[in-house]
Length: 137
Image (cartoon, rainbow, N blue to C red):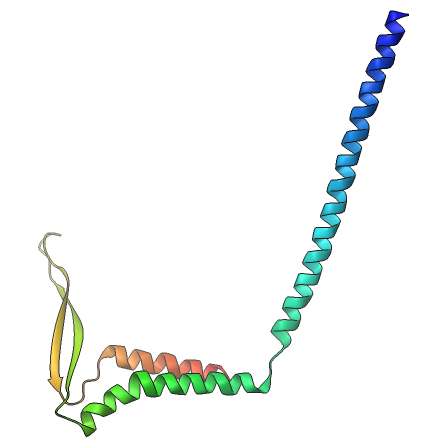
């Protein structure tokens, strides 16, 4: 009789444990299905956003590129042409030679000139902004 009670109690505990495990697995499955549905919706929203290209967007990109070119590149280069008494100061990176790895390194020197100064940074910036402008069409 005691053996039957112990066996019945063990079966009840195992039954409850399997029911809890089954409920956990069902909840995890439902959560996974909800995550999959959310990801599908998110991917659909992303693809719709990528496909949306209003006609004003290209004009805005072109205005930004031209504004950057005027404000950052052309205006600082035109000021010394029309007002040559204003000095232009720019930095120049110099690399000093080393002797067997000792000494040397990079140094920053500042130069002040009167008139127009075109540095490699100007040419690289013009190339980048022109590429941005032409790439938006």
